[in-house]
Length: 242
Image 1: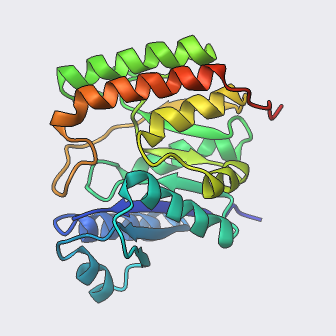
Image 2 (image 1 turned 60 degrees about the vertical axis):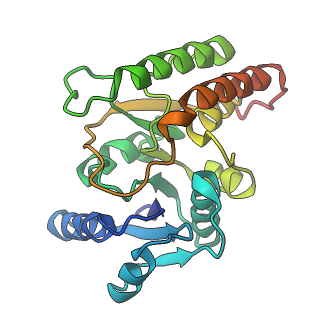
């Protein structure tokens, strides 16, 4: 029996690119005979995102309050659990993620080599078509240092939202998921619980529209709070899954 795979697409004010993103997925699946399901989580967008989703019959959930990236993604995990998906993939609606790399991200899970997988911009220097700002790259290195300090594992792309998880983690995330800083925090927690992980190289593109969940003025606040939360995780007791 083939695995049921869901792409979770959080969307906030993505009127410029959500249809193009969805069409790229449908076109790819038709061309390569892939069976990916999609659910867009419309996080109470103030623009025309909701109308675009309705008019084009794109599978979606409209949130009645803005929950932020963590709440929107957790809604997707709740949907994945309720509909018995085997693998859930987080996929941005802003054009940054490339549908062609989904098969690379889910492969380690399908082959039982990993339980969660991160699509990384930095694990392979050849995939450098997308370059983050210098400040952001420094921030990622700092977060990576603290994750290794806490877990002993090196993560190259700590803020990547291009990720896949197995059924067990879908269930966990459906019950508990961070409202803020979800990628580095959940990665640290999963590593502390000794889940098997893989970081695979992907190419990403520049955002073509919409609103980033991390504003430049928040960057210092973001860094301090991520590091403090990671250090708190260090002193928590987590049961090992293996």
